[in-house]
Figure 1 (cartoon, rainbow, N blue to C red):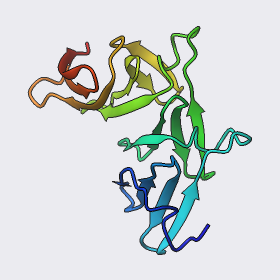
Figure 2: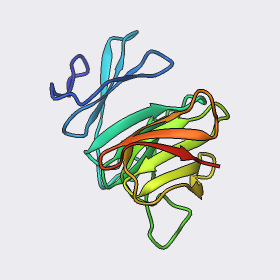
Figure 3: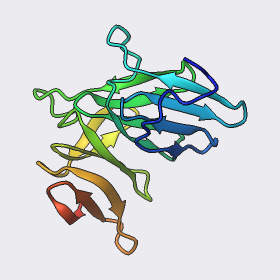
Length: 174
């Protein structure tokens, strides 16, 4: 791969982290990371022989929490947490027999509220996620598929979700 150009021109979205690094997921699922200081691209791809690569080549949302951690959602393959020290990813998958794992392996939306609570929307509901242990603290909904989750500005207990089949919804998460 050429470190001076994007991997492809089929860009799905772009996300800028707190360091000014651009994360560019492609329709192919690969993610380019662009460092404008060094004017260099780095390509991340799924490699099923490497458990610390991207979870799949179908990357959708990218999110940065207040701790500076980058999270990636992968359609049907789980949640990725970027580890900058080792320049790789930790994968969190769904296990139907374990209620402490994600309810579905397609994380489709993220939110960190004003109290530092980290919510993940999957194709089988929203959960409150423990970032330290990589486990679900609380399952909030079943059978919802929200792509966007925001906190109500007037009531911190309320979340708003926009989804594929659910349209626009309000949820009291406590």
